[in-house]
Length: 89
Image 1 (spheres, one colour):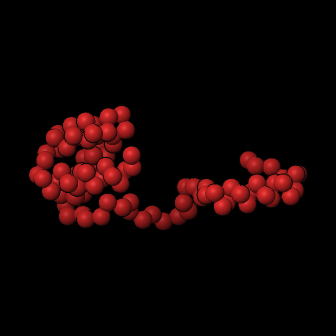
Image 2: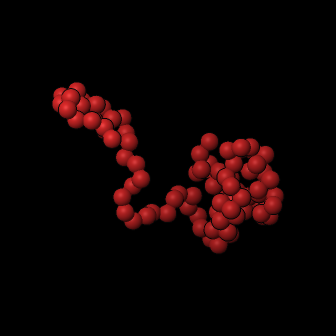
Image 3: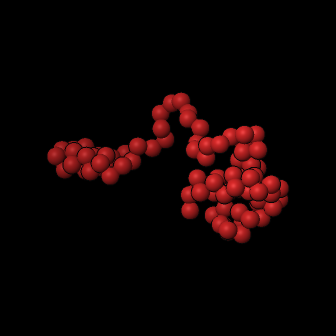
């Protein structure tokens, strides 16, 4: 399950002229516990009804929340093996 997949389905519901209540019910039926929260479904429904086409996140300024990749994990592990006095916090 991905948020983008759910956004695509909300966009489809807008094209099919589904109401918020109908869209929310379909999302909960399709995704169960993993469905977006009610306020997020409403927010995306409103965006798509307003003419938004993209299902991507809006760009944000500042540093990304996480930079964890396999490459970075391997480099950190290698550095720690090279110098055992270092630690991970």
